[in-house]
Length: 507
Ligand code: SF4
Image (cartoon, rainbow, N blue to C red; front, top):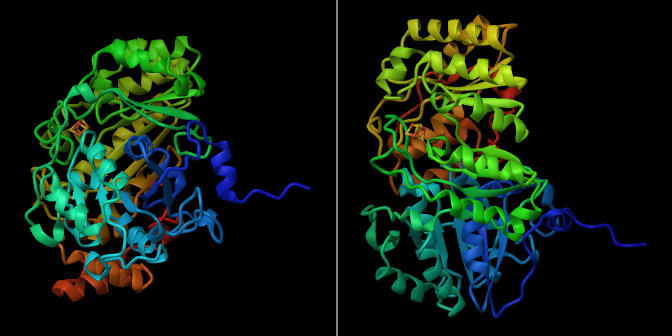
């Protein structure tokens, strides 16, 4: 009778595009969230491919996922081997969200490493971090890492891979990083963070390395059809001044569709902050559909949609059309420079209904500066108009001001106030629109981390030690500066019922 497979073995067997390599040296690439989320990150896949493709180096992966409890892949060990992080030649970390810092502490600690760089020894492997979090406030990440690669690491990752393949120890990696553009060495530079690295369109299209039925983007090979954005939304970290739009030619994107991984994949995901602004997007969708693929797009602007575009999405398997209003009213969309009108959103609903889609999903940010009751009334009225067109889901997210945006200094709305707005929208749309929401309490933790300095790493450690409840986070931040959050006691228990408190899991 064959031995039953461990969950990690089952998952790797179901994955396409990867194979276990053996080489002189081994790195472990960590994503401090679940396998489902990690495997839907194109950046994670691109970095893995660069490391695993380096001669003399094999790259394994580690995530934070309850399904691997007790075997390979359990927190702190590699999925592929079950070896602890400390037993690898280097630990790489790809991190996207502030809240994943808590998972990073678990990863390092259970992986046999002190979470803070200052507590690790010369014999420990170097810890080198990077990822989307570096585009907003990277300071709380600094104390956990020896080196942080800032911004777009497409080129520098090959240099890093060579360091690991050459067997550089912690001290040697730090020394090499001193002469490498875009590398922040927190123990030496303090909060003087270098400029973000940025690459040209020649790096595009970046392509995924595997697909899996267990990924959030199920059975989807990922392809970065554009990078950055040509627009100026005031709340966004990838707005044009920080991350200008870069666009590859259509034939380079189509050529990727004929490579081995994409031929094998049932679906193709076109990834990018503003893919629907990429000129040839319809041609790329058509090419994928002609090859028998389902399609996915990571971002759709309602004012870019027309009959042909929505028809292609439907042919490619779309049943829910997802668009962003990103503000509750026309007045607020204008103030945020969203450049979108209600008629664009309603037209998107009409187009989706016309081709036979089942649902419209609209993202809305609540708690923006200067937002008032009339804005919420307008949102409710808009929800009813959408529901007149088709079945609608509204997804509400509390506003979190981010560094490198014009709203970096904006206030965070009190938890109770945002919760009251959410409840008002729920009441106003009851029976007509399904209203989902992200937890304002969790958003408050994200806010505090997005405003924090290097010392916020201590708050992360304390909160993890305290069990990561809201109270543990409040206590941890209060120990730093004596502040308490406004209105947390008024937050209702409904959010807990939605299971939104956990800091580990797909968002
Ligand atoms: S919110 Fe979207 S459209 Fe606006 S700047 Fe960001 S990526 Fe671009």
